[in-house]
Image (cartoon, rainbow, N blue to C red; front, side, top):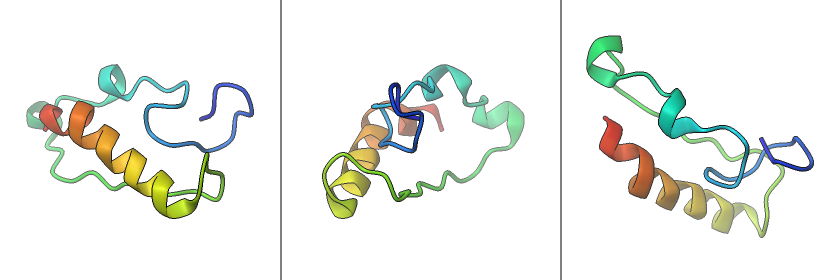
Length: 64
């Protein structure tokens, strides 16, 4: 969720702290993450999807 517009945004650009919010994958049984690109993006849909994927790889993938 974008900090200003409250609309969709790329991972890492918004107000949701996924690093602290996501459950422990072992305790919860979490097996998969799905990244979705909404209709609101900072640049274009392809770059925004890439930016979110890069943020996921740098910051969230290590949690699983």
